[in-house]
Length: 243
Length: 310
Image 1: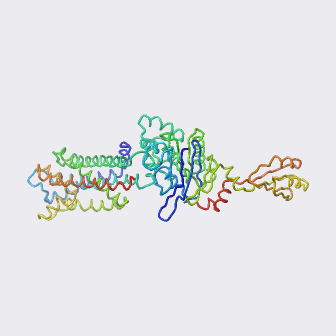
Image 2: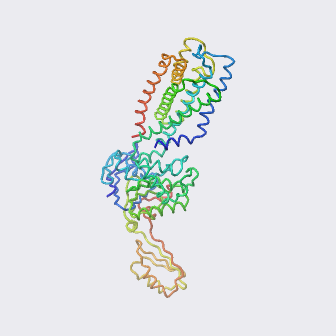
Image 3: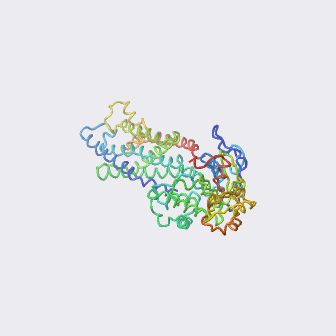
């Protein structure tokens, strides 16, 4: 079941290209822009360049879109005629949903890893505390795959889930200051760090880079709480498709 | 008894999909469930599998009450869906392995069963190809194969030949006959009369949620008491022979038009031997007969032609 869904997830070559090539291009592009006009990053006073901030930010951002891998497969299995074949078997449908989610998350994690490796090896981003960033990346991916699945199951529509996540995926990096510099005010500093789950992951990662434990926890703890919340919501909502 | 449905009622809003529907399927038989689109066939089989709960009545499968939650019943049924329910981006082998794993087959069992089933459905040389490259008929065969991996005792086929070419249809019908000859119990639904005639040992005709008739093909034909029409062309027609034909008690009507005799025999009774004996002197050049068939049975019982419902 897991092997099948991993293979299934890995067959979408166009999806992989988009979720790997796009962020790499955007990282290179915005790095070029910000080299001319440095923006506030929260890492002032450290040795990290804005390229590092962009690499982590875009790796997190594109996994909002990467969540589609999970909920689109759930939709195929439980919102198309395939559900009759699946439900006619003795297999507990919840097991299959878990397999789809975990497989999707693994593929998504690998995509993000490739983005960060590209940024490090080819663009010169420095991420020395890389192993500590990875768990945060993983939690962010888990959250977004669960969130996309909840939206899809509750709305019963892949299109709705894609639209909502696309809007979120467009707005979140904007407020995280990835596309353009935000006003240097306490309000925008707060929004930049905590407005969206993507921003929470970004804040926790920047805390790791700046060796600022309180900053890391201020992003990580709410992200974990939100992940738990969305997991509970999914548990409730999938009863709709598994019974 | 493999399946027993008693007075099943299923409502979808104001629509009565099953209306005091009853059905029995014995071990080893192929029961053809025949009815137009919207007759309730799919609701009936989904209720039997446990996918759709019924509002009233009872269903037992393998002697166990069907409540939709009993995995032991599901593990003994192979369900061939009306729609193609395979993954086009995956290979035939990956599809079979996945659906087999849902029935709890281990890797060793899958390694043994996949080539066996692939041979049966004629896809042994295409196992590693993505199914989106397959023809409609091959996809249909794989759709069936994915239901056979766990070697089910009961196979439920919901219109398995919809939308395929005649060659693939014949392959599937032959395949169903082979399965039946091995003693597998099959519930086969279709709105194609000739398919049900070809594969079913017993037929249940369904319309508007009711079972309106059931029995073997000959029992159903006898039941409607339809007339057989026999047309016999001879070299030289004779009035004298016409009178002899009229004297045969089974023949209700006999006419002669130039060199062609038109005889009417009720209820599919065969009297060819007697007719041939009378007309053998006249040199018979052609014989045509039209006996009542399942289509006539359906038309008589429902007042509808199945084809009109397509």
